Length: 66
Image (cartoon, rainbow, N blue to C red; front, top):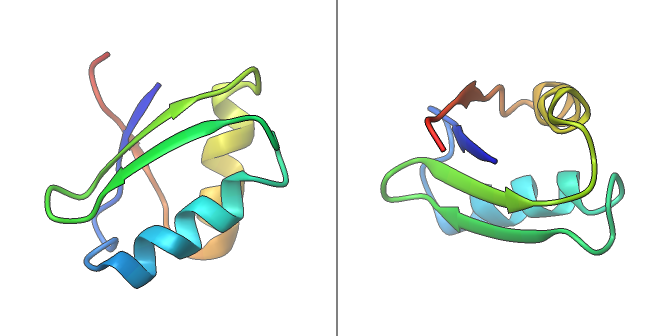
């Protein structure tokens, strides 16, 4: 699944986003691209779980086309 995170502007933000997702699914593969403000997540977790944890962490996400 892909997300657009408007306020992910640097690699520090990308690390925070990654750390937010990992507790939801320790086996998730997370590819953060702060330059384009996009995150791709390969996970068994539900999209709504990922969206919720990102919002709670201060990085609300909008859906990107797959």
